[in-house]
Image 1: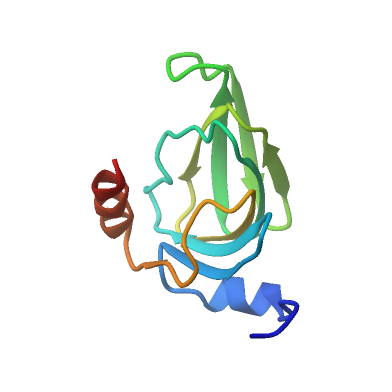
Image 2: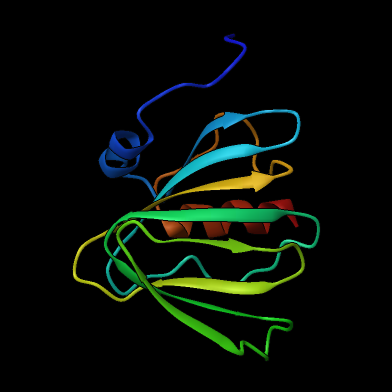
Length: 133
């Protein structure tokens, strides 16, 4: 296994056809690419112990965030080349508001998924989440 991950993140993100594919997991972080279909979303979630950086490569979306599941007080419209950071403990959702897949990559710190994780669809991701809890 290589000591570092190196790749063309823009091409890998834009070419990704899965809801979630983990590209790399290290001791303290994880790199994942995602493709969210038009009208779909990541789903409202919170990571109590994980900071998350996300960058949009293609598409349009809306980020909602707040301190509680029923208090999403911030809304940001995002598109190509935008990035945002979700601190640990912040409830958030990313919704594809465009007409093409929303292609993004995300860095979790610490890692949030097992190495090699691939969820072809959001339904696959939701089923895996249910199995974990």
